[in-house]
Length: 178
Image (cartoon, rainbow, N blue to C red; front, top):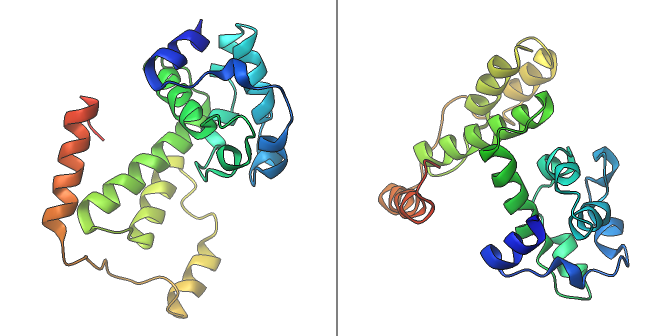
């Protein structure tokens, strides 16, 4: 059961959740989720691991920490969602929406790794190519570029050595490419 693995790997006891629903009521993306956060927690408590792992909710979580800060039991729900995403990815459990979200996350990290910050235009182009929705939002994008809201060229931070060192340490810790 994932509940025991979560306890062992990240130290979070999901059985402390008593369904107060404070996590769900504060979540800014709950409107788009197929299962609410408290429903994910209940599924884990009941041993319905597949329900949690196949849920779009774990991919839509933005890791904003609202749920974790609202939890009266002090459960780090954000880390639980991270654990579930990593497990689902390892088991290759993804639908198209989950694949797009995971792809966006990788594009975001690649941008930060390359420039030390995000390069919005480059990210948009890569995401549009990945989703094959190249012309969707084209008018809005052009207006934003013309108004100077999106820089045409990437800007780098001054401390790229530290940024690359951070990514190197993360790879070493996680034993995988980030």
